[in-house]
Image 1 (cartoon, helix red, strand yellow):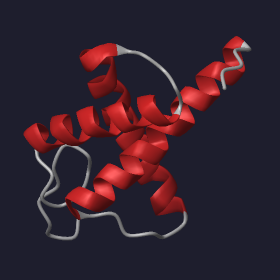
Image 2: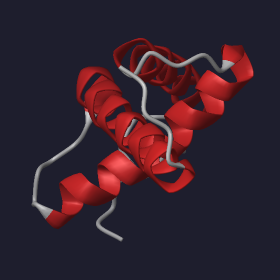
Image 3: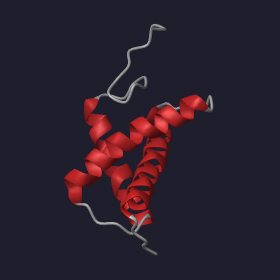
Length: 95
């Protein structure tokens, strides 16, 4: 490691509580953008998994992700991608 203390999303300064808060907000935003309905627990899970996906993609493009706003943005993008992929696999079309 590089000497930083890494939290729940693998980023400096993001602990478990903030990962849940960011996950809930990111899941809710993705739910609104994609016209979906999952509930609070679904939003939290979707947002946390979306954060992992978003941070992975950002790392592939060498985009630094740190702090609340950048984690929220990357988690929201990741959650939107997850919803789009699930819909594509299921064959759903929503507008």
